[in-house]
Image (cartoon, rainbow, N blue to C red; front, top):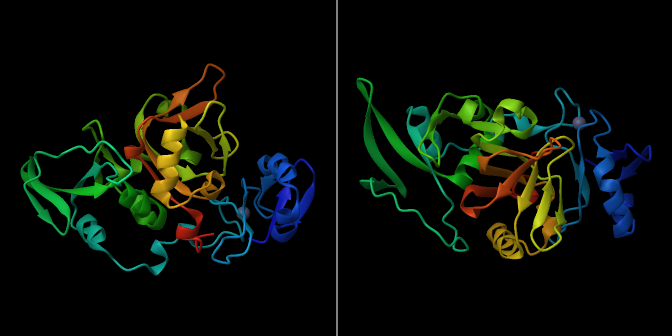
Length: 279
Ligand SMILES: [Zn+2]
């Protein structure tokens, strides 16, 4: 979107005007930006090297916002892929950690018997029938959550990192749906990075919106690995990205919520440019 409102200043900025402000002023204003139509938390996306113009984003917009577009549609017409077919077949999915070259630890699934199209597949007994267990890479899970509304609401079963089983609907929690009951619970938490901020002593704080958990990247080594994983060199480029993290939601004594990313294997990011149409 081309405009966003600063709640504290009571001024609507065009993206071009905002881009010309001194960076210090932009930094002060960014926490106050909202969608001009629905007042959802907004963020500023600077001009990209590939020529994409500066703009504002606010995903997710509030319900029925006239400025929201495809994000709640089912895949935006994207073609079915092998994962979709396996979902439709009623498979259970073991969520696999990222196996990016920047990731150091790789867990081996000793029980996988065969590999079909790069997916480990095995069969387990469940009740009287046989459920097929496929594997789904963590980044692929995020892709499904972002692009497939039907998947988000589905009862498709996931095998989590602690071997517990959760339906997608219960096991994957968008940050706007976080409740008290999620405290200390292992879930796949997902949402949008609104803006990042360098952390004293290294690493970063990733803001996800007012009242939403803050993501904590613990040190510069992890931050560097994360940026390499998403193909960017600067922290600022994480603005507007979709992310997912499998871990426990932590609460500070003052009630603030945090996702401490202790393990990049369970952190996935789709940068703004991956899903630029979904705004
Ligand atoms: Zn809106």
